[in-house]
Amino acid sequence: MENVNAMLSLGNVIPLQTSYQPRAHGHGHDAYLFGDFVLIPALFELRRGPCVVSVAPKVFDLILHLVENHDRVLTHEDLLAALWPAVTVTMGSLAYAVTEARRVLGDAGSKQLFIRNLRGRGYRFVAAVEHARV
Image (cartoon, rainbow, N blue to C red):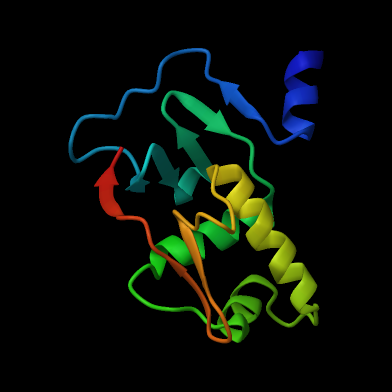
């Protein structure tokens, strides 16, 4: 258990006790599929293959908001209002959350496979997204 806690604190991928199997059609939870990932909002869970990925709550919220709005550019103001309502934070908080989201997804600012920075405009989730029940 100590190793699992150490892995969680580092934000690593945690293998599940059993392999992840989608539930029968019509049952389960709404999910978003992109790349090797399954994002399940109702469970606050991000999976990569059969593993649950440890994600900080604000980073999870950012990924979810970007995925749910993948068809448009989200301005910095849109993201700040969605992630930190009624709280004043700096742009540094948003930049840090985006950096962490990219790290969790195995992306980088230079690659931008999932999260694209549109300089002066905001961010957009650019990977293909499918909606499913799992």
